[in-house]
Amino acid sequence: MKTIHIYITVLLLSLPILGQAQTYIQGEDFLPFSQAATSKYLNPKTQISLEEAFIKLQEIEGDEFKKTLSQLRGEYYMVDSMMISFSCSELSTLRKLKYRGIHYSYEYIKYGFDTAEYWHIMYKDLDTHKTLVYYSRKSQVLFFDLENDTYSIMGTVYAPEGKISEAQEFIDKLVESISFK
Image (cartoon, rainbow, N blue to C red; front, side):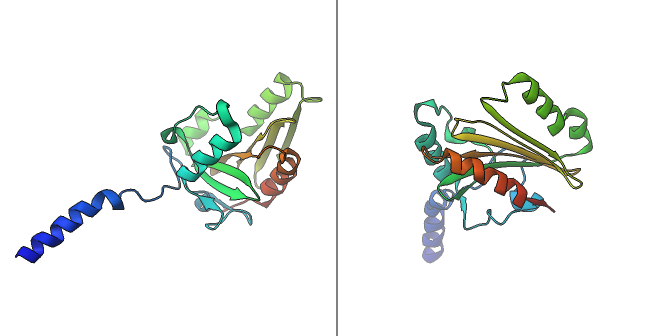
């Protein structure tokens, strides 16, 4: 009987430790990237925890980074010293009615910003899905959106200082490598 009490006590004392496992995805109605799509650049080996992503974002954005760990959304990966965040969600019938889609975002960015000198915008309407890549030419933060009839993927590439041109080349390769399931 005493042995059972010892086991129960040890189990109860270890629960707080077990509860501190690494978290890899956070946010309401978000799916793991692997459930919606695949990419040769994104796999369990390149995925990082939210805690690691939080530290990396503080390094990259410095004083401009104002979020707390609990405010991070989606999941994060590290590829060639660049951090990539993904927020994947399913486009249900109700959500499709509210969601205007990538083409609407493209039109807004295209006519709302000085695209010739400061912004890069690439929109493609392919047979299987639509893609939108956009970023300020001098920024360390680059954005992309992909959607098909079932899923929406919003992502960001964070480049360390001095690697902006590499990130600009990489984001095109990354978007081209993504295949919806």
